[in-house]
Structures are given as C-alpha cells and as structure tokens.
Length: 503
Image (cartoon, rainbow, N blue to C red; front, top):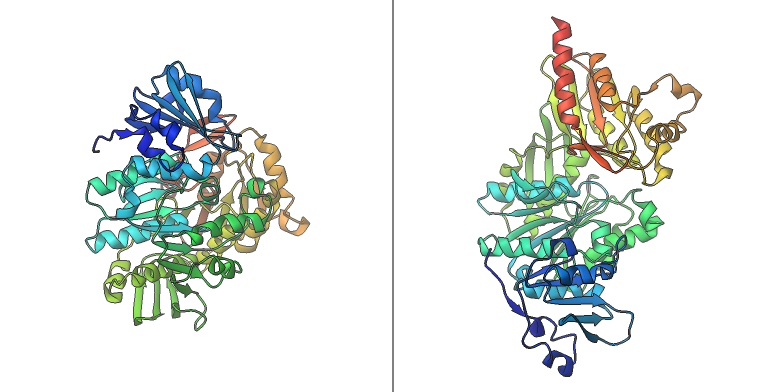
C-alpha cells in the first residue's frame, strides 16, 4: 500500500482551536493504531473508551512503544492538550463520533472513491455480500469483500475478528482497494459494528436489509434497540440506493431512516407485494427455478442455490445491482453459476450417500428457515444437529430446540462454543424447549464430533443431515481457548466412515 505520512494538525483541524493546532504543526504521523500492543514508531494512538476495554488505560504503553501522539476520549466539555514525555495527548469530547473521519482522512478518504454495498440483517449478510461480489466478478468487475469470513476477494480472504472490522482495518483495506484500482466493496454491517462506530466515516452507496430476528439481545437488551442499531445504516448521508425486505416487520423502520433522494426498492418472496419478487418457484434437487418479476422486466431465474432464504438473498442482490444499472439478463446469467458460501447451506455427500448440509444458522428463525428449505429438497428424513453458544442470549436456547423439532424428524443437541459456561448446562437449557412428546425425537451428546458421526452413521442415501450453528468456524471455544475444530472436516470424515460401513 502507498506509504502515508500525514500532519497531525491537518487530521485534527476540524476539532481543535487554532491555538492548540499551532502547537502540533511539527508533528506528523505514519500510521494509526487502536491497540497499544500494535503501535510502531511514528504512529498516532487513538484511545477510545470501548465497550469491553478502555483504550485510555494504555496511553503510557503506546507512548513507550513509539507513538508520536495520542488522541483520547475526554470527559471534558472542550478539547484538551497535554504533553507526556514530550508526546502530545489530545483529548476530544466526541472522539467516538469523530474517530471515523480522522482515520478516513489519514487514509485519503478512500470510501469517497468506492462504490460500497452495505448489508445488514440478522441472517443473510454473509451470503448476500458474497453473492454480490461473485456476480460482479463474473461480470468482469473487481469487488472487495469484508465480513464474517474475512476481508479480501472471493477465494482469497484474510480472517478477521469481527463481522464488521475495526475502524483502522476497515479504512486501511478500503485504501488498499483504491490503490489497486478496485472500485467496489461488498461489506457486512453488523448491529455491533454500526452501534460501536466501526463503520464511522464509511460512505455507503447502497444499503441492503435482509431481515431481523432474535439475536444479540444479551447486548442490545430488546428487539427495538437491536432494530434501531440495524437502521443506522439507512441514515448514512452518502446513501443513494436502498434495498429492503418487505416480508420483514421492521421494513418500515428502515424506510423511515432514508433521506430524501434515496432510491428505494422493496423485495419479497410473495408474488405481487413488492418491486421485485419471484413467481412459479420450483425447488429442485439441482437448485431453484423461478420467474423473477422486476422493475426492469421479467426473466427466468435458474440457480444452484438451495432454499427459500437463499432465493430471497439472491433477489436482494439482483435488486441492488439492478438499481445501479447492470443489465438484468447479465445478472441472471451470472446467478446461474453462483457457489455456496463457506458454511452457508454448504453441501457434502449426496449421490448415493446421505446429503449433509453445514450451515451457520444460530438463531431460532434462521434454523427454522434452514430446515424448511432443506425439507423441500429431501426425499427421506431430516436430522438436525445443533448447539448454542455460551455467554450469549440464554433465552433463545429452548427456542432453538422448538425450531429444530418443527423442521426435523430427529434432533441431536450438542455443544457449540460454550466459552466460559458449562456445556452440559447449556444443553440442559436447550432441552427445556422439548415437551414430553418431543423427547423421543431428541438426543443429547456433548461431544460435537461424536454427535456428527452418529447423525451421519444412521442416515440413508435419501436422508439429509443438517449440521447447524458453526458453519465456517474452524475452532471450538472452551474456557477462553479456541481449539481447532471444523464441522466440514468432521462431516467429511463421517461420510467416509459411512461409506466404509457399506462395503
């Protein structure tokens, strides 16, 4: 990436009075860090009062590591300036709101040069963002990706800690795209990322809302607050287009956030109820076939994707790209060759063996939708295996089992990421969702690998086994340690064992 050295006074010119700016004219910064452990000589350390860790506690550590200046959140009503060991420490009262603009300015305001698609919603963010990038790439248009599976390009992603990366990572990656001549970015915008300001300074062009169902209530407290956080994406000043799921009860909230001049398009799975919708839908073994009705005409859709929710995701993407003028026939041709996203309705086996679906579904609604989708493609029995994460909303645990029992003939409850909690207690919480009549269809096994093997071993070639909850994750988090674990690898091993047992 192009080396960047920026005068500190220029980065802070909007926020400090002339008197204080005059004292900073000799200072230039070569980088910005939010983590004192990553500070290098010449960096500006930005000390934010985070939700879990207060960066202001590490100012001295950052200075010792070579920071040439610090910008910290202050409780004072006006900006402050002090010197520690000859290092400028600037206090800004509204740093949480201003940090994005400061970081963006350091990297040359890269989002101004990008066409950025932001996707928010409980379920479907990753699939939508990846389908969008896949379609653009197939049309010869380079598109970066940022989200749950990492950042980079389709087929070449670097892992990231959060669905929505931190401010510095986000703006640095956008600058790298601009330097490389890439002008499009498909980005997941999580409720945490929006509320915590991790998308601050990002100039979204298009916003997509997929749906809103119960999740993260341990953080947001209520569905109303959760919805409010999601809706922040739709009030972005730079927004030109919005694509909104009319089948979701929070669609109207998203619409109320839109500024005058934003072109909005509604999509639905119900014929005749939105701007873009499917009719004559067929769920086949090889995928989905339908007639897609759009503002730009009617076309036949054929896609290898499975499930109604994936149809909804694809329609949202086609709507977003259609709004930007891409020819409808080109979009539909690209949709014919879409590939499943890692850990999202990902297929294993089949062809004389049980079909196993690995999916990230970890909310009651997502699991119910997943199983309903699988049922449309299944000739035999559906078995669902899932667990619930520790240190997360305990109220959804019994609801997950109710959703599984509704859509599957048999259910295996196992461990997910117990984190600091006792996995057996989590399983006990989940089992509260089964009444006496449903207990006979429910089995609990704490060992996730053994549970996957058991589910596959008892399946026939006509059956489908759904392994839900972890999707792409390559670890299982127990007591603060992430142990290597992959549902995909365990499924492939179980299918090999199944094959061996037949001979």
